[in-house]
Image (cartoon, rainbow, N blue to C red; front, side, top):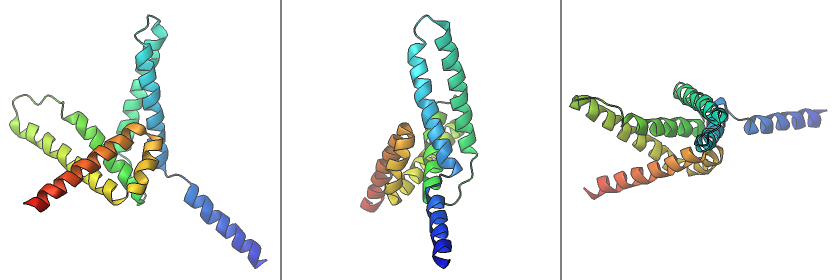
Length: 163
C-alpha cells in the first residue's frame, strides 16, 4: 500500500513540474497572437475587407495581452521572472518612440528606463540561459529580444570592468 501511495505522490510531483505557470501560458498565447497578427497584417494589403477586420481584432487582442503581461505577478520561478523582465524590456523599446515634446527630462527618463529594463532582462537571461530557448519556442520575438538584451548586458559588464 505504501508503494502505491508513493507512486501517486511521485506522479503528482511530476505533474506539478510539467504544469505551466499562468505567465508561461500567457507568454505562449501572446506569441501565438503575435504570429497571427503578423500573418493578418500581411494579408490585409489584399482588397478583401475581411483581412483588415481580422488584423484589427488580432492587433487589439495582442495589445491587451501585452498590457495584461505587464500586470502579471510571478510565481517566484526563474522562468516567470525572466519572461516578465524580458517582456518589460520589449515594451520599453516602444516607449522610446513616445513624443515627449521639448521635455528633455522626460526624454532622458524614458531612455534611462529602457536602458534599465534591457540591463535587468539581459542579466537575468545571462543568469538563466536554459530558460531563454524555452521562452523562444513559445514566443520567438521575445526569445530574440532576450538574446539581444543578454548581449547588451555582457557588453555593459565588460565596459564596467574595463574602467
